[in-house]
Length: 102
Image 1 (cartoon, rainbow, N blue to C red):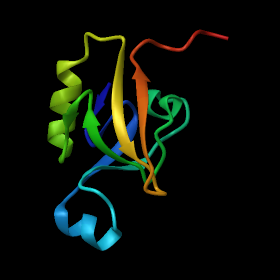
Image 2 (cartoon, rainbow, N blue to C red):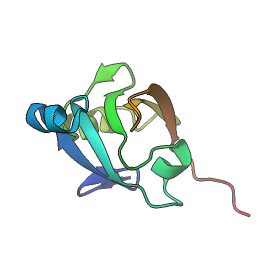
Image 3 (cartoon, rainbow, N blue to C red):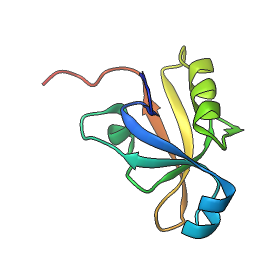
C-alpha cells in the first residue's frame, strides 16, 4: 500500500509553508497523481487535493502521513481530511479491502 512517493496508489508531495502560500493551499500533503483503479481514486482523492489529516491526526509532511497510515493499517478503512482544489474541506475514506471482482 505504501509507494516510494505516495500512499494508496497516489503520488504525493509535501506542501511546505512557502509552497502553500504561493499556490494558496493549506499546508499538508499534495496529491500530484491518482491513477484510476487505485484505492486512492476509489476513495475520491483527485490530483490537486491536499491531505491535512489522517484519522483525527493532522499531517504536514509525506513522512507524517505515512507514519499515521502505517499505524492504522489494521483498520478496514482510513479516513483522510482533504482540502479539495476548490478549497472545500471534505473527508474521504480509503478502504483497505480490495474491491469485489466483476
